[in-house]
Amino acid sequence: MRFIADFHIHSRYSRATSGDMEVETIGKWAEIKGIGLMGTGDFTHPLYLAELKAKLEPAEGGLFRLKGPSPVRFILTAEVSNIFQQEGRLRKVHTLIFAPSFAVVDKINTNLGRLGKLSSDGRPTLTAPVKEVVKLVLDSSPDCLVIPAHAWTPWFSLFGANSGFDSIEECFQEESRHISAIETGLSSNPSMNWRLSILDPISLVSNSDAHSPPKIGREANVFQCNMDYWEITDALKNKDRNKFLFTIEFFPEEGKYHYDGHRNCGLVFSPQETRRRKGLCPSCKRRLTIGVMHRVENLADRPEGYVPQGAIPAQHLVPLEEIIAEALNQSVNTKAVREEYLKAVHTLGNEFFVLMDAPKEDLFRCLPARVAEGIIRVRERRLRIKPGYDGVYGQVSIFDEGDKGKTSAQMELFER
Image (tube, one colour):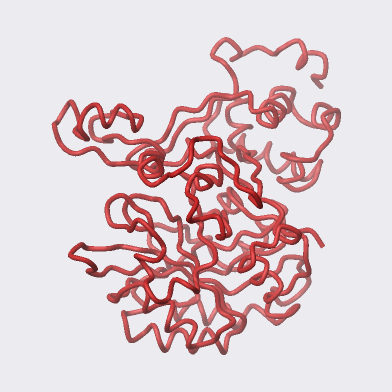
C-alpha cells in the first residue's frame, strides 16, 4: 500500500509546543492532512508515555492506532538532544529514535535516564557523546533505528556550522555503521545533500518537526509497502527505492536557517556575500549566523544540480493554508483562512490530495479561483521565495504584487 509518513513531531510536553499536541488531536490532523503513519514523538517523557500507553493499542506489526476506529497508524518515536565536549569543542546534536514496542521504549528510557533527566522536557538533554545514545538504544533492541535530526541546522545537528561535525564517522565514531539515514531538515532538501558523495548510501528523510497540529506534514515521506515497522525501517536502512518512493519538502529557502545573516540587524547574505564580508555583519561587526546553504557549500564535493545514481526524488510543496492565506490576502492564523482550508479538504479530500493530485478542473470548480490558481502555480513552481536566515523563516510569494486584488484571465474563466 502507498502511504505518507511523518516521523518527527513533538508533544505538549516539549518546550514551545502547543497544548493541543496530544495523541487524539495529532491523529485527527493526520487524517485532515492525508498522513497514514505518524510518529508519536516524545516517548522519553514519562507523562506523555503514560498517555500513549493508555490511548494507543497494537495495530499491524510494530505499529499502533488510537483505541476505537481510526485509519491513522502511529510509530513510537522520540527526539533527544546531546550536549557534550568532543575534540576540544562543545557539540550539540539531536537524534530521532524509532522503537517497535512499549517494552523496548521502557528499556530505552531506563538506559537513557542514566545520561539525563527525561522528565525535564519532551526532548530531553543528555550529557554524553551522541554515539552513546546509539549504543544504548541498540542495546535496548537491535530493531531500533537512530537518525540524526535536522542534520544541517546551525545550532543542534550533525553537520551544524556552530556545533557539528564534517562527517557521520567523525560524529558517531565506532557507532557510525548504525547510521543509515539522516533527516535533511526544513532548511535543506535532498538535492543539496546529493552534493556530498559521502551521503550516497544514506537515506534522506524529511519530517515536519511539528510543534502545533496544523504544522504536521509540512515535510513527510512517501512509502509503497506494508504498514509494518520492520518493513519501513528496513526500507530506510537499505535505501530501498521500490518501497521508499519520495519525500515531500518545504522549499528549503523557506527554512529559517537557509541563508547566512544577522536577525538583529535584518541582514541576509548568500554564502558568496558572507565570504566577501569575511563572515562579519557590516552593521554591528559581529559574526554572522552561518546558514545551511553555506555549510553545504563548504562540505560539498559536487556541483549544484548533481543527481547521484539511486537518488530518491523529492516533491516540493507549499502548505495549503499558506496558499489560501496569500490568495485571500490574510494572515495564515486567521479564522477566514482556517474555514476555507477545512472547506477545501472536506469538499475535495485531504490536504495532500488537494495539493498534489486533485484535477485542475475540480480545483477551480470547488475552490475560490485565486486559491485554485495558487495551487496550480505551486505545482508548476511559478513562485518567488525570499530566503530565511538566522532564525527568520523565508517568505514564499505565489502572486506578484500586481496580482493582488484581481484575477488572471484563467481565474476569471473558472471563478465560481
